Length: 291
Image (cartoon, rainbow, N blue to C red):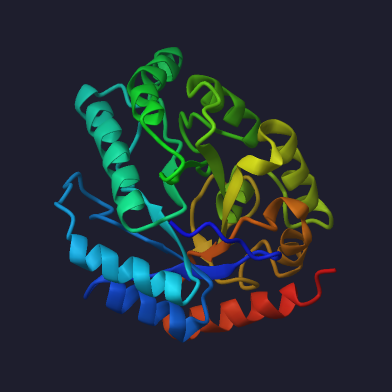
């Protein structure tokens, strides 16, 4: 697994995999000028865990290494380690373990899971206990060659286990601050949850808070998304950079912050190659201003 990092944050987007990662994902990355990409290693809306294709995995790893493209995996959206429904919880643990395995097989640096929800307020305390029980055996099997498990806070709706960034410490407590657990910060989610990153200095303030909570070394990935909705709306609706309620200036603050120097920015915004190509180019232009 490649471990080299650029001095400045890498830039890229979530890429499609239809037709194979070695062909479609890599071609997409080249088309938009990506230095890092995120992929789904299985159906994002299902529990299926298909057998790996070692030949295809090797082809992808080799092409990504040749082009110096860092890879991240987004695990299925169904994963909710805090669910009170036994089958959902069990499937979530199994799917997370599978996603980490697939991440290792394709040479990814990290595997992203949503922090999820207790669903019912009465289940919150039990949720933390079951996360510990289910995930610690998985984490204890990880080696230096395995990807990070990256916790992505959601938009704060319902009985979210991480309503605001301060709640992340509870998740890390549940996972015993394992050294292979990090954070994927989604700018749309954190804005929706009530952290006003749109105001001047707001992004810097929010990143400073995150560093104080988990440490700079655990900030491993950024999902760079604008928001269709206002701050605190608790709605997860992504918008293209500069076309939403966050605006462009906060992303300049984001790129300049020391916490993201080794944390790639991945777009999950509407559109395909034309739109993502323009946004990657925009972020690259902003990056040139970093001192």
